Amino acid sequence: MTISIKEKIEAANAEAFNRINAAEPVLVDIVPAGDVVPGLEDRMVLHAGPPVDWKHMSGAQQGAVMAMAMFEGWADSHGQAGQLLDRGEIKLDSNHHHHAVGPMAGTITRSLPVYVVENRTFGNRAYCRLVEDRQQFGDYSQDAIAELYNWRDAWAPALALGVRHMEGLALKPIIAKALQMGDELHNRPNAASAIFAGAMAAPMIGAGVGKDDLTSTLNYMTGHDLLFLGLSMACAKSAADAACGIEYSTVVTAMARNGKEFGIQVSGLDGQWFTAPAPEVDGLYLPGYGEGDAGLDMGDSAITETVGWGGFILAGAPSILNLVGGTPEEALAYSREMREITVGLSPDYLIPALGFQGTAVGIDIRKVVQTGILPIIDTAMAHKDPGHPIIGAGLVRAPMECFHQALRSFAARYATE
Amino acid sequence: MEKDTPINELLQKPIVAINIGVQDFAEALQDQGVRVVNVTWSPPAGGDAEMLAILEKLL
Image (cartoon, rainbow over all chains, first blue to last red; front, side):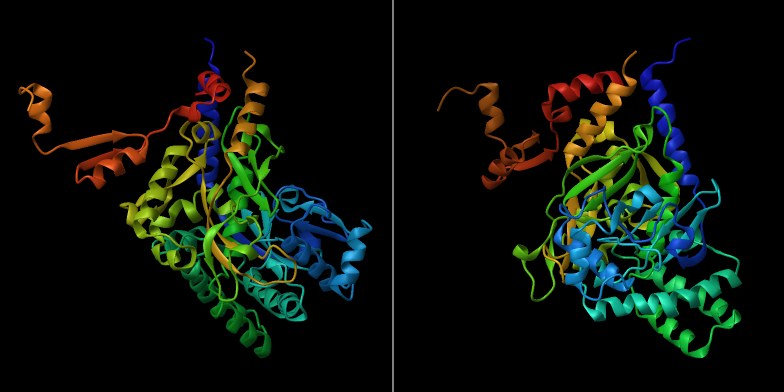
C-alpha cells in the first residue's frame, strides 16, 4: 500500500511533537563556553539569530560583539574592537550552529560560562549564556562588562559547584510548577527564577562555596527576576534540537532574530534558514526612550515560543502585560490562536487560565501559511544604535515570508511524487 | 411604506447580524446600534495561488 505524502507528514510531525514533549532537561554544569560548545573557536563570537556578517549586523548586536571583544581582552575599547572586526580578525557565527542560544544579541565567547543543559531522554546537550539588561542589548560600557566578569569569576563558579554537588538539577519540574505560578518562561520567568534560587542555595553551601562568593551569588540570584530565562532557553533548545532532522516533518525547530533578519528552521529541512527582514516590535518604552530609538526584533529567546512557551502562553501570565502591553482578553485570544497552527497540546506543561490545558506545541509551517496566523512572541527591545542597555519590551509576530520560503523549499524537496 | 414582504417584516424586528470576515462591516453595524456576532475568517493562505497549490499537495 502506498503511503501518501500527507500521511508521511502527519506521522513525521507526530514524531517531532512527541520528541519535544518527551524532553527531560537537566542542568548538568555551568562552565566556560570554550570547554563545551562544539566548534567555538578562539577569537570567535557567537551571536543570536541567523548568520550575519559584521558589516550587515544590527547596531545593538555590533555593540554587544564589541563588548565581548573587550571582555575577552582582545581590545581595550569599543573603537579598537570595531577596528578588529572591520579587518575580519574576529570570526562570527550563529549560536544555533553550535547547539547554543543567547538572549537579545546573544553573544557567547570561549571565556563566558554557559548553562549546560542535557536532554536526558535523547542525550543531546544545549547551551545558553547568562541573562542581564546591559551588554546583551549592545551596551559596551565598563559597568556592562563588569557584570560579565562577576558571572565568570564568582556567580557561575559558585553555581557550578552547587550543580555538581547535587549531580545535576532536573528542570522540567521547575518549569511545570512555574507555569502554575503565572510564568510564561520568556519575559516572565519570575517564579521559575525564585524556585531555582531556592533549589541552589543549600547545594552551594553543601559544596563549600566560600562565604563571600556565596553571599554575592545569593544576592545575584534573589535579585534577578529574569535569571531563569537563560535556563528556559537552554531547555527549549535541548527539546527543539531533539526534533531536528525528521524527514517529512513540517514542524519548526528554531525561530531566531539578529536585529536585521528573522529566521526559522524546519525539522524536515535540517540546517536551512528561511529568513525575512526582522519586524518592528510593538511595545512599551522605558523612561527616556521612544519609538524612534528602537532597533528591530532581536534574540534567540524565541526558542521558548518554538516549544510553546513565551507569547504562546500569555494567557497564563497576565502580569507580563504590564511590561509588553495588551489586555488579559487579548492574551487569552493569542494563546487560543496558537493552537490553530500547532500539532497538539503538551501533556505536561499545563496552563490554569486555559482550564489546565497544555501549551500549544509543534508549529506547523503548513498551518501558519494556510491560516495566516503568525507565531506571537513577547520580547525585550534594544536600541537601534550600539552602546545602550534595554529600552523596552513588547510583542511581535514572526514574518509570513519565512513560512512561505520554507513551504516552497519543503515542496521542492518532498512533493515530487 | 411598501407592502409587508418577508424581508420588510424581518427588518422591522430587532436584528442580530452574523458577520464573517472583514471586521469593518461588523463595526459599521455596531455603530448603528445593531447587535453583531463577528466571525474571524480570511481566505486560506490569504488567497495566494502558489501557496494554495502547494498546500493542496501537503495538507
